Length: 387
Ligand code: NAD
Ligand code: MG
Image 1 (tube, protein in one colour):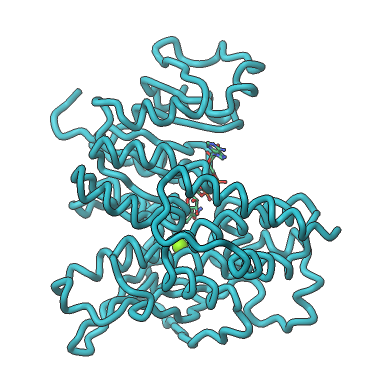
Image 2: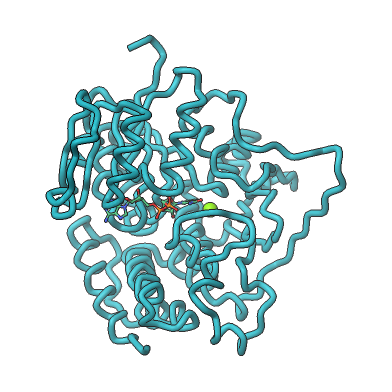
């Protein structure tokens, strides 16, 4: 392989982030190369991607579904690996420089962990990993020297803005939030929200789970916790502003009162590229701002009563320990039930809050304990089934 080429394992290749990442890689003039692609179940799409990219490996993480699939269209030079353990094996392979962690939910934890353990560059879209196990992941990265590169647009913006000053000069970070599709709805109307309405995000085109999380504002709650661990900032130094245009992706305020922001149209290809090409900036295929036109940017402090998820995020960021894993698991299960028609939209956040309240707090859980608490929180959500 040519010198200077970055070999990337794209875990979650068939998803919204994975697909955008493959566009970025294809446009990189050979600097970036996808050597592995994974999918849980959309194997037609995975095989199509493999035919275009010609990776060394594809991973079908749902072993049962993979056994029933006819793989004859897979390129001859591509090796098929099956089952969730294969994600970890590939994340550790010597030939892999960068792991793009773009699996959705807690299913992304083990492979991200393996990549950090193997001291890879980890382009982290899977925020749930940090929400569940932030302190452990941080500690492991410090030990192994793995580099965590945020893909989440807000955290990428903060990561970029942080370069304007020393770590000790940061006063606080300000995460922006679009407010989701229901920003202007009243409480009574929210009880009538349908699945289609919740799946229609005003500014971002994303996978179903994060789209629902954006509608409940749980996505911002998870991002508060993600920022807490990624940047090692206490919850008091994290703020949220509602910014409906999704142009300013987040900001860092320094001790002298200077605030540095990162702006670009809402398109994930830019933060993905920044993480994959880091520390370089390259010409990009993502859209640019048009500075020849008038533009209005609005910022409103959020009403924590209107958006109770935010209060939950701040609480979990403050408490640390097992609070993150409880919020994450309860939310993941609740969103699954909402998508399956078993839970009302307005029950998602209260279910998470009540399970967080009820749980047996563990100040420094191990990975095994986290997985146990994760299972408990999911079972608790089932008590909320109401449709
Ligand atoms: P998506 O639903 O579009 O894709 C998810 C990917 O994960 C698919 O490739 C799927 O095959 C794989 N997957 C699903 N379940 C799996 C399992 N049990 N085991 C292994 N693989 C599994 O999701 P997305 O919107 O691309 O989001 C991916 C991650 O990136 C999430 O953590 C999300 O929070 C984060 N993120 C996404 C965006 C966005 O714009 N989509 C922005 C910021 C952060
Ligand atoms: Mg985000």
